[in-house]
Image (cartoon, rainbow, N blue to C red; front, side, top):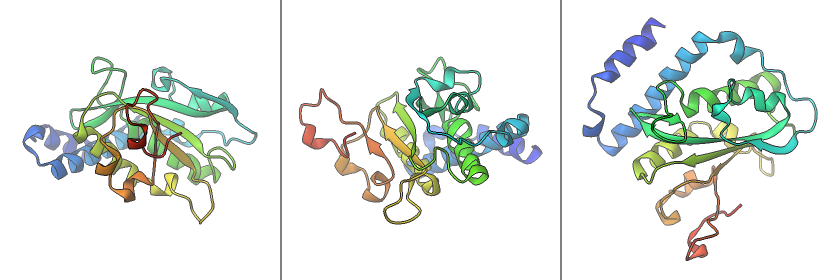
Length: 212
C-alpha cells in the first residue's frame, strides 16, 4: 500500500497536459494500475470470492453496470452475459461514469472490469463458458487521446480479448459503442482486439469497421 500511495503522490506532481501523447498513455496505464492495486487491497475478499459460472448465461447485459453497488459481480451472479460501461479520460485515468460529474478517482475501467475479469479467468478457467463475455465500452468524449489510451490498455489484456488458439472464441469480447477515430487511423494490431459498433446514422457506412 505504501508503494502505491507514494507513486500516486508522485503522479500528482506531474503536469499531465504537458506530456507527449505517448507519455500521456504511459501515465494513464500506470495510474490505472495503481488504482486497481489499491482497490484490491481495500476489498480483498471481493476479488477472490466470485463464484464461477456453471450454467448458460442469459442473453442480457447490464447497462450502466458501474452504477450498481458491485459492478460486474452482480451481473455475473444474475447470469448476465455482458456489461456496459461509459468511460472518460480524467486526471490521467480512464474513469467510469456517464459524465465528468459522475467520474471518481479510483473507479477506473481497469480496476472495476479488466483486472477482475482476468482474475475470474485465472480462478475459473473461463468467464462465460464457451461463449465470450461481452464488455461494451462507450467512450463519452470525442478525444483521440482518450481513445488511444483505451486502445493501449486493451492491448495489455490480450490474454482476455484474443483467442488462445486459432478458431477459439476469446474470453471477453470488447465492443466499442462510443466515439472513435476513422478506422484507417486505428493500427490493425489494435483493431483486431475489439469491435466497433456500426453507427446506423453514419453517412458513409463503409467507413465503419467490424460492424456488430
